[in-house]
Image (cartoon, rainbow, N blue to C red):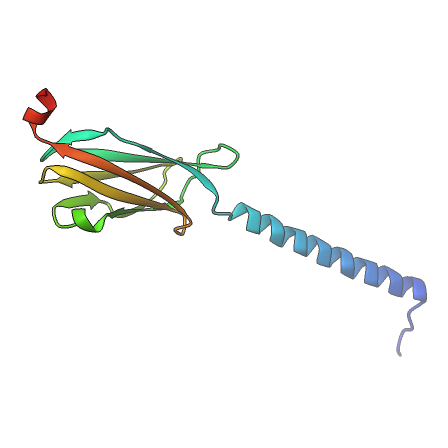
Amino acid sequence: MMKTTTPQRRLRLVTLAFLALGVFMMAQTGMAQQNSEDYKVSILKRNAVAVGDSEEIVVRVRTLQGQLAHGIPVRFQLDPGGQKHATIVPEQTTTDHGIARAKLHSDLIGRVGLTVRVGHGTVVKRTGLAFKTAAMDAE
């Protein structure tokens, strides 16, 4: 036996369907905003280091609301000129309570350029570090 629906019942079903669709769409929008790749990135380091020493590069990542961003991928990439004589370890890491760290080392005098990519590469910061001899520091 087939049950017939009244116009009021149809209206309620259609309203419920649109309500469910609206909730679903709002949830999708909320997830997209939560996964947004907009971060505030700052790099903490000294300007110069003695040749042969290592310098810790500290990257601080915050959300646009100012909260520390946890678990965000961070990649460190040396400029092509510095790749032969400098190393950065690790080349890729994730933030731990908004902080990512890497060690930069060079065996030659000069400036080593560094690019930091946060998230999936959408936030890019460039910096550099000068490696000097002890005699250069005395001047």
